[in-house]
Length: 294
Image 1 (cartoon, helix red, strand yellow):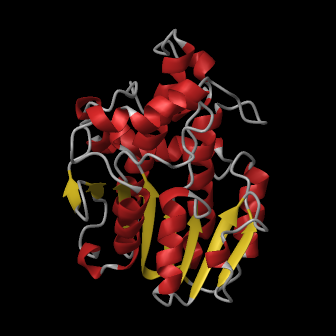
Image 2 (cartoon, helix red, strand yellow):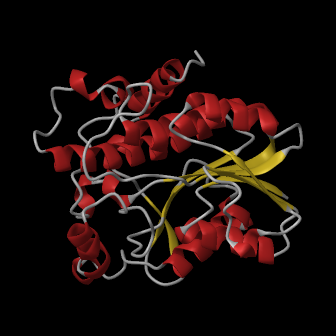
């Protein structure tokens, strides 16, 4: 089995990668900003780490070109950022949406012809995409890729910079979930899934926040979150590894899988907007144009 994965160098993604290797995975190709700085547990003959900077489409294209022709059995698009204030990527687009959604969309599009029949594609989403989930993160207002990439064109943007940054994150996660659902409709020989890891303290996701805010995220938020929404690096890593290899999901293409407590991964319904097929088709086509693949 050949797995290509982003977001495998820290947090629950690293935990997942280590589990796959320990289970005897044939080949794991990792996209990383610093391929030379891997966890020592990943220093194995079957692990190949290659340069991938999701802030640059050119780096995504170079990474995809480097994969070669060996069929891919699972493509796991797990990397992500969550910023404390709005930032722009080098090409001027909103940074969170570009890294979390657009670059992953581009990588998926570039590798589609190398996905083996029945291959699994997993995009990491988040409960923050759902206004009804009570995550305390500013929820999305829409899934319009043009306005999410260029926030100056968005008249729904929150005035607060911190809320705008949080909404950029939740909107990118909404887009990830909608992309998985749309992929399932477009490709009937793939298994497309989105994965909500739950709230996982101890990852590097909130590293851009001020020190006190980051401490609150790690130490206070777990105490007030609903009991089944908090997880751990080990639990979410184990459940993502299961989602990658467990055949029970073969007939659930398009599903949104959510970590609910210890050792529990459930298929649940995402938000009403995430289930809007017309909006998902538009998002797909707009993303294809924004990454230069139209």
